[in-house]
Image (cartoon, rainbow, N blue to C red):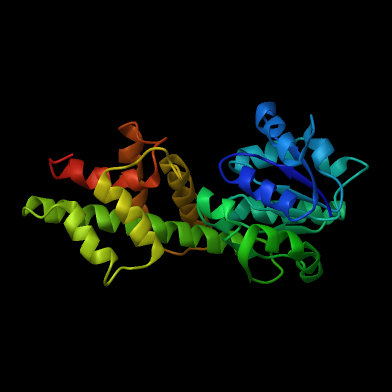
Length: 291
């Protein structure tokens, strides 16, 4: 397929490369041109403008947030240009409200829009083992399936309303942050009674909390290893805010998410925004006088 890929950050770069490896023609664009040029040696085709990428059989976006996606796609007028893609696969973690807006503007432009946010860190993206959440027109998802298969281990479908996939992604990310908060508090309690955090987390993440989220983030907390970030704390804070906004719009109380927001704000206030999300655990340590 002839693919345009917009956004080559820590997640977008390996996803685009996996599309190249799968045999697709992939035109790549990034705000910082150097990131696109680096992929030329791997078989991708760097382009100078978003418009040159947003065409062909499909366009895939992995842009940082709501503001970036709206600026490039909507305010950039890409849906108004004469040459448009056969479908748009939006893999960014964005708000439910923006997903609904994008579905509407794509509908008016006659371009099928699929929300397809992903679960997985950069190493998982590099291995092509992402779990991809897909919602949108059934025929469009079927057409995009070869691309989804190249980037992920499994595609989880959530119906024809694109925003459903974004609601699932935000719910999942809120639960990830809650797991880190719980481990941080538990580690602080253990340390206060003479139990090293590494010993406590080794037990818990190999027995009653042995899911990958606990094991991976627990290992980072136990080692105090928060750089380089796999998933940045500032991005986690953004996602919790988006989850709370979606909850308020639907009148769904989320008291735990409100607690998480405040803990994340504490971490941001102490300069931890560019560290890994696991650094949230330092908030509990600091509050207990041991940070």
